[in-house]
Image (cartoon, rainbow, N blue to C red; front, top):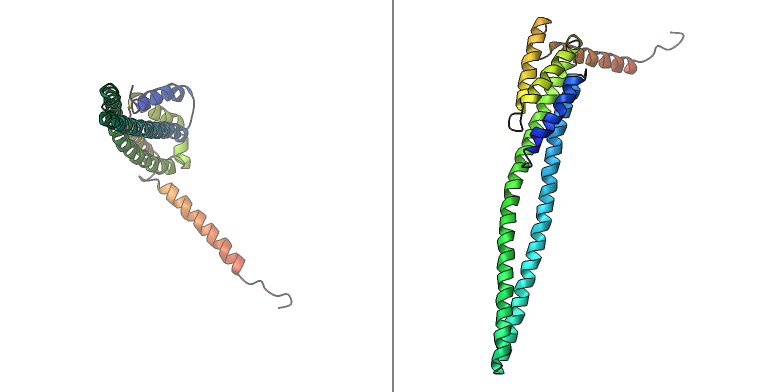
Length: 225
């Protein structure tokens, strides 16, 4: 199972819980987002492990290169002294160390290629997670209206149902289906799409805050006047 494939299993593990519990859809969406966040953290941990492995392979390749150089130096010294046995043995050692160096460098190249691909996956997952958070925030604003809250169980079921069919490649299906469900309920409740009620509540809150601010700045009447 690849690291990204784990998201599917994480979503599936959450689905049964969502179907059994009389939960609110906001919490359900948060748990789906938590799965994305967990997968992103797993990818980042794997990237750190790869960096450590690459650093270790670089050190081993460098040591093999240094040892090969030492053996070649001994072979040259033995050659000047006409010691063919020692020279031949030293050259063999140098050849062995060079072979080790090449093996380490080949393995390092493979790990570095994997690291590049992992960086691309992390960047895509970061973008995906941020997009999901943005959509979640917009949905939550609509879910918090008084007329929508009484449909929480139905909406939570919609999230759970599409989570059961979603994979890491189409998790947005949960948001799409919930948005469609919300639009239907808003129409039935006589709300304009986009949660007009939320906007009205915000305006009322801002007006109330403004009145308090004006009242606080208004000079008090002096006694006797």
